[in-house]
Amino acid sequence: MFLLKNFYILSPQESREKDFEFYKGHLFIKNGKIEKIYHTNDEINLQPTEKRETPETIDTIDGQFRKLIFPGFIQCHIHFCQTLHRNLAEQMPLMEWLKKEIWPYEASLTPDTMKQSVLMSLKEILGSGVTSVLDMGTVHHQEVIFRIMEAVGFRYTGGKAMMDQCPDAPPGLTETTDNSITESMKLFERFHGKADGLLHYAFAPRFVLSCSPILLQAVRQLSDQYDIIIHTHASEHPEEVAFIKETTGYGNVAYLNKLDALNRRCVIAHMIHLDAAEKKMVKEYDIAVAHCPTANLKLGSGIAPIPEYLQNNIRVGLGSDGAPCNNSLCIFNELKLAPLLQKGTHNDPLLLKPEDALRMVSIDGARITRQEHRVGRIAENMEADLVLLDMDTPQTFNFEKNPAAAIVYGADARNVYATMVRGKFLYKEGQYDIKI
Image (cartoon, rainbow, N blue to C red; front, side, top):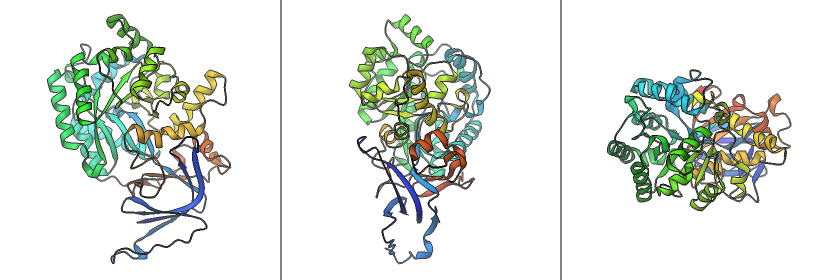
């Protein structure tokens, strides 16, 4: 049990009309949940409900009103498996980057190197306040990721990459349609909903250029049957979109629609180069967009029309993508770039408020990962996935005036005092509680 005492608390509200609630208060954390919220004028009454509980079993952390509690950050698109290839794939556009660097690297992974990559990723994101991810693995060794997440107690949604039609991929990434589906279903049956709901499976067809129409159609049917997320990429780079149009006669999203491969469970990364008809499809299917501004810039892919998506009530989350195309997994980079890119390219300082960016990594990220009943807000009976930010720093001076702006434009990983997942500190004061 924890009493987080004398903190500023910033929580997104379910309705955008109210936006955020900001107040001074205290949180009582018990059995992995926010048991009670106290405002500063409330009397704190922590009566033991079981004989074994005594005041001594309550660990009190005093924020002295210099620290702020926010819902743990949620990354909606990341590749844990790629992190060992950081800084080794530079100065390339998307397709060359995949063929020459990423696919050969992924084909070379072993269970041991996968474990190293995942642990390195996990430490980096915990140190920057992330408590949940939507991850895409590679074709093999996905069970390694799930086992680590279960042992650590991290909130994880992900799945093996599905690649049954990719002539440019090395032999280590080739698979048949039947094997791709069979292995995905084995992982789904083994891990989905396990660890008391911390683990969830997502079907992960990589993208149109690596998947057969039969596979994409089968994934849609399985998603409908089992009510499971489809996590994929689309319309990331002009070269990719041009090739798909040349070979199919359709835009990327339009081709997925022609195959009947889209549904409301789709979470699609990037979504930069869509025409008007495709944007209408996104709205009609209630598809979620995972926005990766840093990776999109580094690969020269472009800038997604995020204000347009938000104006049309399309769900948008943020992600770092993989370390080789970023080269950082720190969510603060994405939080800052997301609004600044739109303001600068549209010459409009009023576009995309810092509150919009924070919603992407909290309440909207929770909706995208289908965890909104558990996390994404600070409310009683919600699970205690929290980031504790030290705001007593030069870069966050005067944070009380506009806390969202202070976090989005000024804060970074140095401000992360602690990261809690379901009431357990996995990171605190520079130390990790990761036992494998």
